[in-house]
Structures are given as C-alpha cells and as structure tokens.
Length: 170
Image (cartoon, rainbow, N blue to C red; front, side):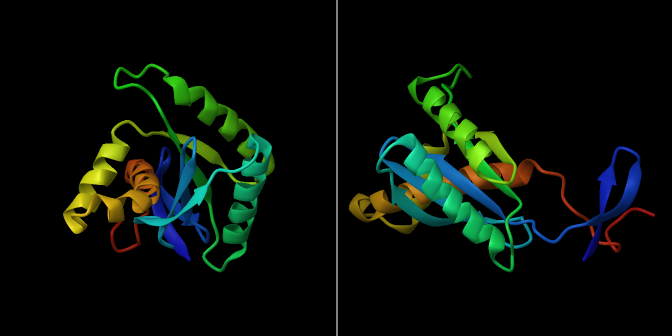
C-alpha cells in the first residue's frame, strides 16, 4: 500500500503495512490494554490483565502479547504506555514505576515503546463508560482497558495523518 505523507522536504510516498498500535495503562494491580484498528486511526479497549509476580514477569508476559500481536496479519507498529504525571506536570508516585516498566519493556520487544501523557485519562474513561452503563459495578472491570484506549487515542490523534493521492495537495 502506498500512501503520501507530508515530510519536511515535501510530499512523498510512504510505504506502510503495519500501523496498528497497542496502548497500555500500567497500574499497580491491573494493566489495561487497548488496540488501534489496522489504519492506526481509532483506539478501542481490548482487555485488562492482573499484575502478578515481579516486574520482570510482568514485562515478559506483556512482551509475549506484543510478539503475538506483531505476528498477526494486521501487525503492530508501536506500543504506547501511559505516563502518569500530576496535573502540574510533575512526577507522582506511579511515574517511576511506569518508567522502570517502560525501560524493561523496551529491552524486551523489537518495537518502539513510547510514553504518552495520561493526565485525566481515568476521568475521561469513567465519563465515557458512565454514558453507556449506569451501574458502577459493571463499569469498574472495564475502566483500565478504557483508560488504555483513551491514552492510545490521544497518541493516535497527535500523529500526522497519512493522505491518499486524492487527498494530497497539487
């Protein structure tokens, strides 16, 4: 598939086959996962996994998930991890834990692993879920995956969009 994208030097072809992305909301007890569609435009909640064992065991389990997704037909181009910060932008208690996780995950997978600001994503995820389901007990198990989807969608929305030949300027 050939798509045209805007580069610093002008419009040119960009060959893109694997554009799907994995979003991760890394928590102390649970890890929310989200996937983008094959076009890399829309994020959706995928699943929530319990954190069990050591950091190395958690990284190994997620590295297996990444490898499995990468080997699927739609592939996987990037892993996006929520980066917790205070509203002021300063680090909080969870920031260092996420940074240690990302450091080990980068060493364990053969894909880019990027950090994406996750400020207010839990609030936004709760708001989206509350619009669909009034009972908080039914929303709670979905919250981590939805938070991962919000993180991933923020990342996807911030990327330059590919254009088809018909969309590119003359």
